[in-house]
Amino acid sequence: MSADGVVELRVYRLEPGRSASFDHLMRDGIVPMLRRYRIRVVEFGPCAVHPDHYYLVRTYPSLPARQEALAGFYGGEEWSATFAGPADEMIADLTTVVLPAGAPLARAVSASFPGDG
Image (cartoon, rainbow, N blue to C red; front, top):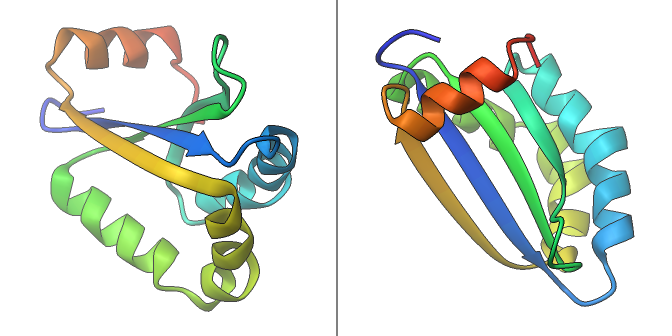
């Protein structure tokens, strides 16, 4: 990731009791689709302390690259026809934080997960 890259952390608060279903949807559908769109998924999974929380960490080479990638991903037919409805039914709330690659946390994330996602 270049110096102008970004790390995105998404935290989902799920509807009670939907964690296993959401994890299945992420593992078997959404994350493979993200990777097909060449969006680098660093890590994802259930929260270690809150059973109804889930996280997704993605990186992008720049903010414009992030905007372009997400527009293609969420604007595509596959997302709207296959995943948007089921995901929306399980998500109670979503928080997204985007960090510049130079931020200490972003550097630590990038160094901890050197693979291509």
